[in-house]
Structures are given as C-alpha cells and as structure tokens.
Image 1 (cartoon, rainbow, N blue to C red):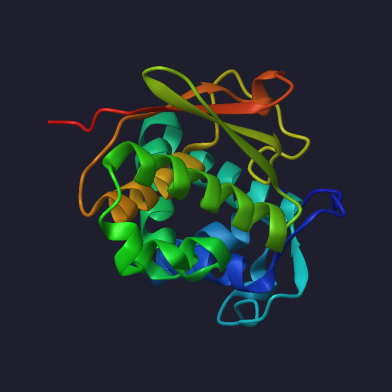
Image 2 (image 1 turned 30 degrees about the vertical axis):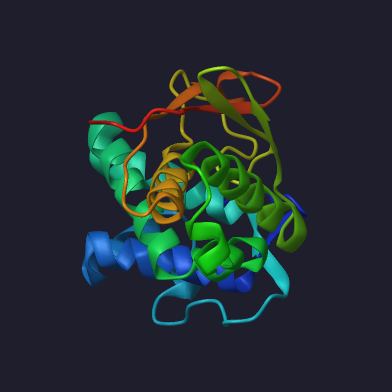
Length: 209
C-alpha cells in the first residue's frame, strides 16, 4: 500500500500521537499489522520523534486510514477511526497551540456557543500553523461547517465513501473537551476522496441529549 509521497506533512509529534492512539484502540499486534499493511513497517517500535519537524508525510497518514478500512471493512474501520481520533485528541492534540487556551478559567465561563466557535477555530488554526493541513470554520444558524482543503486522510485516494472519520473523532473529542463534557453530532458531509474540492464536517450547535 506504499504510495508516492505527497510532499505535505504533519509534524512528527502529530504522527506519533495518532500512532499511539491507534495502538491504544487496536492493541500492539493490531497496530503492527496495520503498519505492515500500510507500507510503514519501519515505524514498528520506532514511532516518529516527539518534535514539531514537518516530516510525517500525508501519503503515510492516508496509508494508515486506508489500512484500517482494509483490515476491518467500511463499518468496522469507521468505528475504529472514530475511536482513534478521539483518543488522539485526548492523548495530546489538545496541547497544540491555540487549543491550550481552552483550559483557561476565562474560557470556562463563556456561553456554550462561544466555546464551540472559539474551540473549533482554535483547532483549525493549530492544524494550519503546525502542519500542511488547511482548515477553515464557518458558522451558520444551527451548525458550524469545518472545511478541510488540504487533507492528510485521502491523499491521492478515491473512495465511494467518506474516509475522514479520524477527523470526525478528533472534532468530537475536541468539542467534548471545550464544552466541559458534552457530546455533539459531527457528520461527514463531503470528502475529497469522493471527488469533492474539500472535506466538509458539519457540527450541530445543540449537544446530544
């Protein structure tokens, strides 16, 4: 499943966090099988270093996402990618850049809608600042739209289904974090792997009951 490299990168630390999250939800043997399948056997017991150098190629990240579907099928792969995304945010992505401010006391007393707006924009800005992923947030009456224009999950990949469930999981856990423990519906509306110009994730403003 090895691919031509994209020349677009996450920092090593983001790659490391996601691989550690995959180990958490798949187990060590499952992760090693995935790394072999994705053409990333060199990362077995040799995770990317914990630094901000942009060296984890989007093609390799796409390989991980594809490998999950190959191993577990569309439905099982979707569930595992969601779990891995949530674990990745909980395990370390929350510490990146602007998102760290969401832990401040001043942030905690803001109205819920403001927390969601600030939190989503902070997450997008963190990816824009530290990686080659390009994200943007827009607000509508009842929901937020989170656009991914340069996507690490579907580089040179075509699919009949959305493949961005790692991002869905990251946003779910990020919103849970900024809201103080509430869950929100995050839906994959469009995906670049399906031929769209950008990925689009839609977030309801009202929390799930």
